[in-house]
Image (cartoon, rainbow, N blue to C red):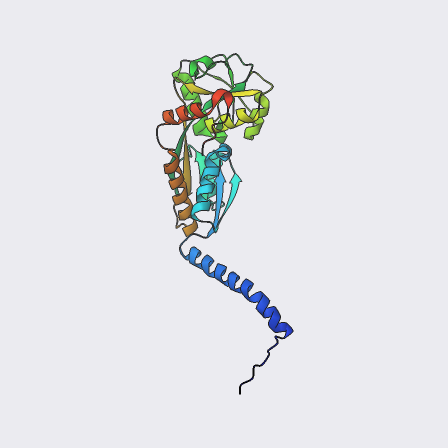
Length: 277
């Protein structure tokens, strides 16, 4: 006749039993991470982005990267557009997000988004009641802007639009300014700003003293591009670019800027935020 035997775990055995599920889970996570890394989904990407990308473009791209590659780490740093190509070429950042990046040997670029500029001004300004505002209406105004050397393409696009409207603009610049410095200054002066529409409507929604208005005749359109080094790139960089491209396609960033401006206007009543994406 067989008798049952009672087995009692030692202290070490009980500890092992308690820790086994945790250890197995960690092992499964490690195996999954290895699988994702092998597929190019994991890794680290150092991103340099122009300041105004942070209000609409960058959050949308980072959300797409998170959806596609949840194990990827993106280390983002703010740089002015003129500095980004050189930092990418030097290997200080892996990918750049810049306005009108200057062509540079050893750097690849891909157009990611066309975005209109908007007028940002105090709510008591003489132009605040107009919407949209023709560029020619700015002839007597002082435009607050970044120095040209920080974003040459952006600066030149604004000047060219004013000249097309028949006048040479009065421009006031201040060195190395963060975008919020423009917001603070416009609340206390009669100057006007011409930032990207996404920034302008976000700023107007956050500051009751400001309003944002569409600019027309001509509409001023900027171009966001993603940059990367021509040398062999990591799988993580490739995945990042794929996610950025998908984000651009899903959000219609490369359709006509006019239709984007109409969408912004429809979703942004009287200085509100566009609230897109």
